[in-house]
Image 1 (cartoon, rainbow, N blue to C red):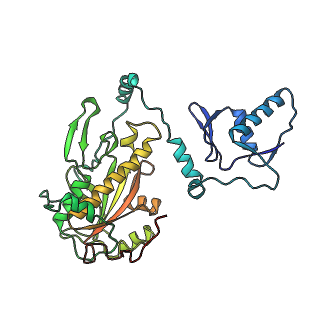
Image 2: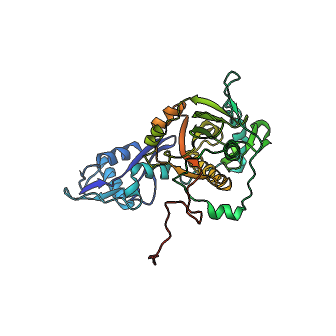
Length: 364
């Protein structure tokens, strides 16, 4: 009998043993080292005699069980391996692995909360605020918020992605207001021995608020062009780099044209330790990505309410962006790039590059 392992196939050791999974198989399986070795050997067609005894008989039984589950398939020498189903055929094995490793996580039972809390307090609690040090200069921003008179309904209906801007400078008050509501704490909550947590406008798992912001300023009144880190507690800008090169950032974001006339850019950064301190499962990485989506929506809607436009992209060169920001490798990483400015619009307020459908379209 000729068999081969399905492709893609993931064999992943962890604290409880070895786990095998594939997008072609509807279940995950805990296996021992011998079965893992068998599956690895079967990446190319493997011949297994159909009549064996002793240890060989156990091997045949394992092969038959793996065939029944779908991790092995009968194969001919020239038969191609079956293709992965959609969407994993397009997204590939890495996306599948992430999807599987963050599914069906065993969350903490109520009776274990006390023990977890005690263990949590033995670990140093990361600060929810990047302390720059008293010697670091900071450009303090206005704390008088710019009024937003647009109704919530109008904000919902007028929020759109704007890719082209007038090139006019954004006022300091509008700039400061956007940063405040998008990234600064609006209130604080005393969580006892778990510390004081920030309450920002954007929702986040466990009020960890692991998303910070860097700002590339190109054309904001009374702010010198350059790259800054936003200080959420002091509501100010910490200088990172005096250069503000539109062409540089355009090259790092797949040349989508956002930086040609945008007035400033926000680069969201995950300070991952804030999340991992409390949430230890791999699923917390999902929370982190969901959280930055909440932040991006607050940015986009606040920009709309201020008469600004915003474009949001995840298409950027990760390593080069992280290096440009001077991030701590591994523990901090960029998650979104958002460019803002005064948008160029049609008479109806829609983005200049949008067109209303002029003929019937197929809903199928």
